[in-house]
Image (cartoon, rainbow, N blue to C red; front, top):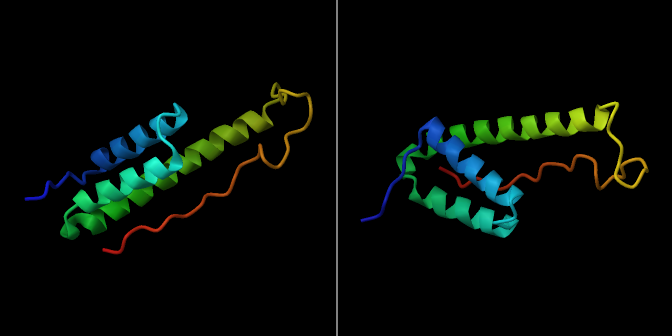
Length: 105
């Protein structure tokens, strides 16, 4: 029998935040994060996937918005100076969010 997991908003938020933390700490690569999300998605009962997708997209949107706000606050700070003394180049600016495929429910 397959294991099924909770799809509460808090559970989804916890999963996303753990993966973000693992990426920030260098513990997981982008590929490992994608694999983790794919495995997690397969554990969700098909009847619960509509709710899980809704929660996941909400958490991802809010997380992305928060990260963008922090980046903008730093870049707009009067005290911010690039480490090499030059203006930030395009690579240092906000990178576009790469949408990933969310499995159909």
